[in-house]
Image (cartoon, rainbow, N blue to C red; front, side, top):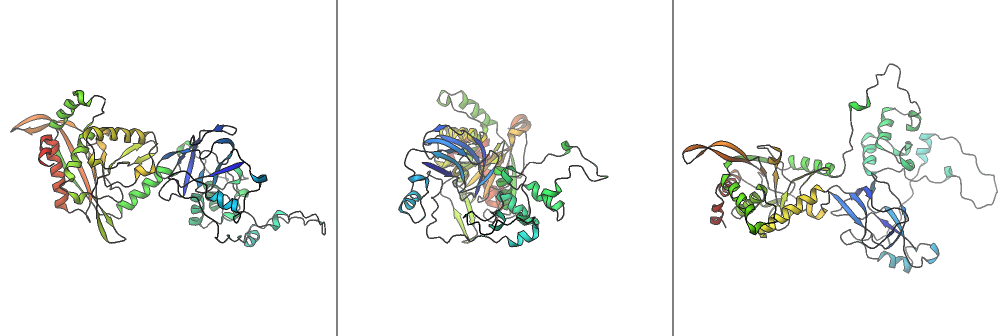
Amino acid sequence: MIKEFRLPDLGEGLTESEIVAWKVAVGDTVSLNQIIAEVETAKAVVELPSPFAGVITALHEQPGTVVEVGKPIVSFEVEGDDGGGVPPGPDDAAGQEARREPNLVGYGAVLETAGRPARRSRSFASAAVRSAPAAVPAPPAGNGSGLAAPAADRPAERPRSTPPVRKLAKDLGVNLEDLAGTGEHGLITRDDVRNFVGGGDLPVASSQLAGSPAAGAVQEPATRETRTPIKGVRKFTAAAMVASAFTAPHVTEFLTIDVTATMELLARLKASPAFAGYKLTPLTLVSKAVLIALRNHPTLNTRWDEANQEIVQFNYVNLGIAAATPRGLTVPNIKDADRLSLKELSTALTELTDTARAGKTAPADLAGGTISITNIGVFGIDAGTPILNPGEAAILALGAVRKMPWEYQDEVALRQVMTLSLSFDHRLVDGEQGSRFLQDLGTILADPGMALAMV
């Protein structure tokens, strides 16, 4: 029996994903839940497990192709009677049973089509007039062969393209039915759309026949520009940052503090047998300090609900950590971080950053954050104005720890100094509230023992 696996919804209603790499080939025998592909959603690269045990008979999409959710991407031959190779109809009992077949957990419900009206075929008469194709000879009259009508007499199928290309065409006022795709299997690409617009009313297929430049045109070296499609994590991050910057009124405050005591504590913890095997960094201790300071300043752990005109107070902390990855910035979060001990927090931070840098963060780990930290100090930066992660009230940027002349016990001494940059949503957090939180955080980092007074 041949089974098709359609691209599932990988979380939060995502409508498309890009095939990054296949881990199998046609003819391979795979087991249930074996990883068969890597796909990139708008948030992360996700490993796709096999829903069947069987033999791969076809890979329907190539790496680099953006595929809509619900389209078949791979076919399997599995054991069982296929009923003579005729797929069950929507009203057949077998068809109803097939639709009740379990799907992968977390990948969305199996689409039900029974009872829905069939989509009407689109009329392509106007397209035929615009394109003015050459006449197709009619078949001999009265042949009585029962053969299908010529292709020109049948409704043409929808032009093959990806959602981003269709949006580009819509924005530019281009009818995809007028284009001849130059991609694989006739796929219409972005360049096809752009070339059509640049070539006036000439069809793309005709405009590309001329390989030489126009007379007098100056040819620029191809290396002068490099164009990278905006997609995946980069596309999602850009949209989120624009939405945040133009929705939440940002305010940023700065505090430069002496963190010598915190750095000395960090050195002692690293040397302690109790923390052997744990990866401890300044981020670990700052994260713990943020969680302690939040207890007295809950307004920084809130969300603005525009639809219901409510302020949502979180009684838990999902701590987001901004991570730079080869595919762009992601902000996975540690669930219920306020309940973790320092050791547990250290382990969670290590796993979170390693997974993010490997591009394996699950979509669920990127959702539901309540407050975030970004460590710009690892790049040697002292301060900045971080943009809020959408849906959160505050984000803290950690600057580099530097040895600087500093006032200490009424004298000037060489101390380890850090600048904290706190951005917050002024709809949710007043200036006084943000300032007091930053002050308490600085107090803990300047003297970690003060945390005992805040617990």
